[in-house]
Every structure is written in C-alpha cells, then in structure tokens.
Image 1 (tube, one colour):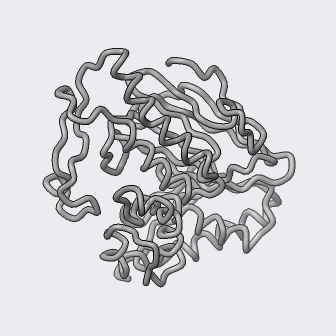
Image 2 (image 1 turned 30 degrees about the vertical axis):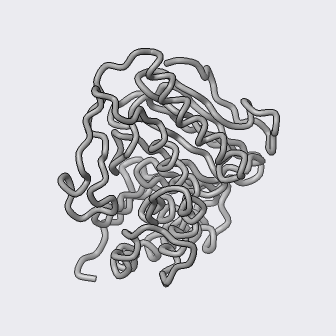
Length: 298
C-alpha cells in the first residue's frame, strides 16, 4: 500500500467518513459512547488496506462469474457469492456487488468489536444495516440518484429480514445496460441487494428503441468489467406505454428474484413512474410487508 486512506469524523461529530480511491463510506453507529468509539476504531482498522486486497484479485473480479471461484479474499468471495445465482442466466461479474460487499465487511468489523443499538455503512447509496431490538431505519428514495431531493421514504424495522439496501440505474456510479433512472432493492444482505439491483436495472429496458443512446463501455472507460457491451448514455422521449413496458420488464425480473428469495422488495423508477415489487404485491408473503409511503407515480 502506497497511501493511507482518509479517515475522519464529519462535522456533526456523529458520523465517520472513510475514503480510499473509489471507495467512499459514511458510517454511523448508535449505542453507548465507548461502544461507538470501539466500533469506529474497528471500522478504520478494517478499512485500511481493504482496497489493496481487492486490487490484488481485480482481474478475476472483472471476469464473468462462474459456479466455482479461485478468489481468496473475504470480500472478493462475498462478491462472487452475491452474483453467483445470476451467472447461468446473464452476464455478470463480481464487481456488480463490490459496493455492498465492502459496506457489509466494515459493518461486520464494527459489530465484532462492539454492541450497538443501530449502525449503518453507506457506500455511495449501497447500505449495510444493523438494527437492534425495537430499532428502525428510514430509507429515502430519489427519482434519480444524480439529483437532490427525496421523493418517498421506506421504513425497515428490526423484525424485518432486510439488512441491505442498494440502488442501481443509468445515472449511478457504474454503467447500466438498462434505462432505469433508479432501482432500489432491499435484501437480507447489502451484497445481495447490490447484485440484484444491477440485474433488475439492466432488465428495465426497451431493446432497439431509437430514442435510447448506447455506447460500448470500453470506449467510455477502457478498464471496466463490461468490455464492449453497450451501456446506456441517454434516453429520449418515451410514451407512457413505452415507460410502462420497460418498467414491467424489470418488474418481471424482480418478481422472479423475490420468489427465489434473493430479494425482499424493490422499487423501480423510470421517467417519473414507479413500480413497487415485494411482499405487498404478491400472495406468497414470506415476510411482513415493508412499508412504502405514497407508493404511486411520482
């Protein structure tokens, strides 16, 4: 390692900021003061050198996932495990779960070091959660992740199975094969949510539509895991029927993942319209319905 990460409390004195290269985390823990301090110290220790661990196996992390892996790192293997359920059906690499897997690793280090009432690690919108008895966490949903302002809030309670939240779409930090403005997924873990959000966002699409501009990923970023695959760069005017069709394509994918137990819910957004998938829209309720306030068109 040739550099040290940036580690500091934010100005509010409550949240910890951890940054190293492309990894940028906001961490907050609640509990006794000495436990919070111990948790933050553990987060800083585990964060230091984590990027280097991933870089040593970056070539394999950027290749298509297969059933078995030779990856050695704890986080790298978690990334592979999160995407493995999709490997037989679509192109996906372990990098699709990197943000959620890193968040999960840092949260795990914190919980190993201290007893906390509540904690989260937010890695650019991909969030690993810890909720003690009676605790809850509110998630803000935005129409597009590249714009300010919260449209809706979703509440996760301690007795919900959800401990991971992730958002993907064409406006995010990574390239998308689909046209979704945002797909937010709730899952049992952050790594699972991250992988599923990528898959569902890719499925929100209108293949061959003339209003959609796509370019090879390799032309935009030579070192990426998508190669020459076409990624969405712009979406022109779409009719309400076309928006509905694209959302339904993604919703069909999300319902299949829900039925397989890979996700606990999803919110799909495109051009101001929204679809909610999860316990509330299926008769096969595996868990108590998640609460989404005002889940209608934006």
